[in-house]
Image (cartoon, rainbow, N blue to C red):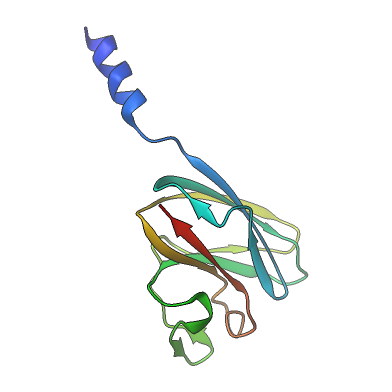
Length: 122
């Protein structure tokens, strides 16, 4: 009986959605523009020659219209930002609710230079 209860609980959890985000000077290119709500595994590949950061921000603003604070976007990430060195790949998982999000690099001047992309979570 316990095994059946565990099996039912495991099958009711949503599947993990996999998204790749390629970053470089000066872009973020996600492998999907629309994903299902729930756990999302994001694999960040730095194709550039500089370190880049990826943070996920839930917002009602257009990706290019986040408020600025100096040389950064004034945005609150939904998970801890990660830094990826040139030629490296890092992966993290974040649970996303339905809504609009921006994947962005918030290192100095990177967002300002256009290192961001919008995604929609349904």
